[in-house]
Length: 111
Image (cartoon, rainbow, N blue to C red; front, top):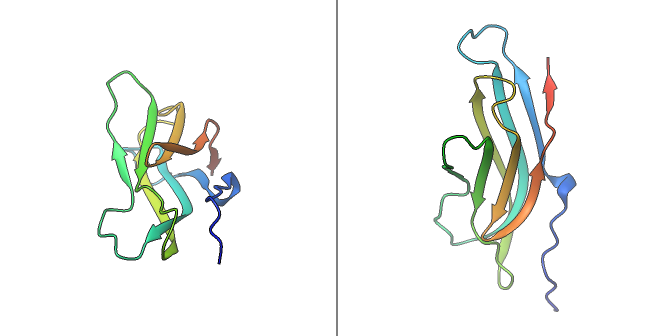
């Protein structure tokens, strides 16, 4: 059996905002869903929001470094967050370790 480098496919990740007409405190909810390869023994949290300096409108999500060798499995990841206003973020970046795996600059709004 030979091992090949992991290939990240952007189309495996989706991001959208669902408008919430019944909640006056926020515009809706941002959802991000995708798949990652993970170590079967890993006890790390799967996804972590990185706090950025104030003034930046960038959401950065950190996933664990994805294993290159050995036994691993595909795991579905779901992140959600209430959005106060539609232009809350200019972009969403998702990293696995230090590798940028996807960047969303346009997010569909579901009404």
